[in-house]
Image 1 (spheres, rainbow, N blue to C red):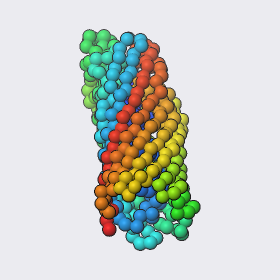
Image 2: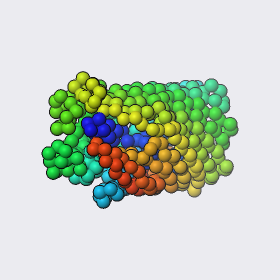
Image 3: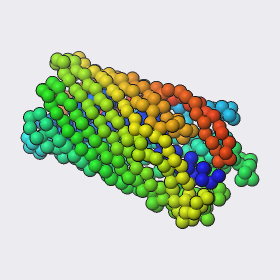
Image 4: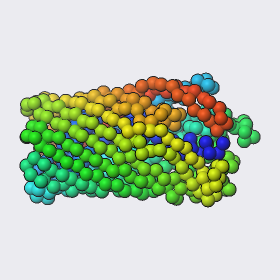
Length: 415
């Protein structure tokens, strides 16, 4: 029983049932990108946020530029427990996703930049008194990356870039007894069953290339390595679940944030119209298990707090968009995207295919400043799945989700 409890609880740290990208991936890096469904992000390079997708594109900037963005993610995710006849509405709270970037040319060949943004994160909040409380509850994972980069123009057509990614991550969760309460001599479903907190640092690297076929056509390639997170200072609260020798013990959880590869294309038809497209693949196949360990834990295996195998495959995201220069002051954009399901659906991760419908605009405030705004409707395919709780009872669930994403961004060019 303890083994299953812990595994289902801890997995929720890392995956969002409201995720608007596959698994627990975060796509919201800019308002301009949001408005085109993040199509062609590694090649458009209309502001400094391109650093998050392709550092090589920094060579396109003639002047230093700062970009700061704030995205508001408002998910509506509803999960129905068909076995117990319980409905959990809005289990994913509203979230704010900030980002900031700075790019500066060094000379005609070299440029450098630094960004602060996130690629992964989650927050979920189920009712405390649901029957499936041992598999769902309050969860939060916050990660922030600092990403310095440098780029070099090889010739008139080819540029390359590289960077280092430093990641801070903090995780919290609480789970409840739910229908298992009588097994612990209680009738209160909302009583805490287990909790966890942890903080860690990790690092990775990224590279990119940009090929300019002409002044109007260019292609981008970006790769971001996995980041290994080692929550070796985690605190596991077992309450009266019996998995540990004390109510609170030190534990260790190791997991890798998957690598990402992205191909981007951008083409200007004329002074008014341009199109952009992208393909992104996230290497979810490397995520095969979740295991936490502690000398003070025993879930049937000495030194193990929990273990759970995972079944994930690499997922693809396809995007297409267009930009229209209405006049000197206003630019309009729109985009569509399809994001494949990455893993088998569970209560903590009712993963599914997602469809993006996006629109946005840019307003020229002055010769130095522009303002971007973007909006996206993200629809997830509804579906059903089964889970087995700690008492070996099979429960059936249905999940449906929609996310409304809004973003605002300021870009300032230093001339």
